[in-house]
Image: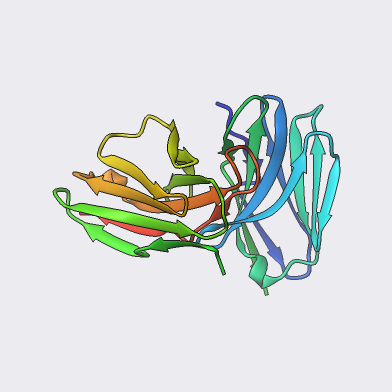
Length: 111
Length: 113
């Protein structure tokens, strides 16, 4: 399967702590994206990192990409209760024309 | 607020009913998508339209029939569904078909009795 694998499957932290989620994939990519989904809602795009980039920041989000290890991580700093959601990585494979979503990480931030 | 609007938000139908899900976007995007999502699972791609033509059909059963009347509208016609088709159906749009950012609607929660 081309689907990305995410870990952990679930993560529970206290407000103010940092949360790190990881995504691994199997074949070469054009880009990798992260999305957030609040319970029962649509997905919201967070950040896109291209295969020639190693790190990107957006507000409290930091994404890294290691193409040699075929992996990416999403770091949320100073987490808030409102960050409670499911987070999905989505990979755009080289030569492909669609995104493939990983299994997701469920993040719970306790206040 | 999402710029992709889906209706209805909730739909309950029997296995012999015919119903439709609707999606609208006004961002000028030329690619539109239908995804199916079961609880605690990632979205699964069903169909992609590019410039109003069906570009990708992920071997979806014929009881699901997509339609793209114009560049802003996307429908999913439902007929003779099974209880296992109960799921959240998500519409998305993007710039011309590719692998860029997707803009999702809030979804239509479908229950098949």
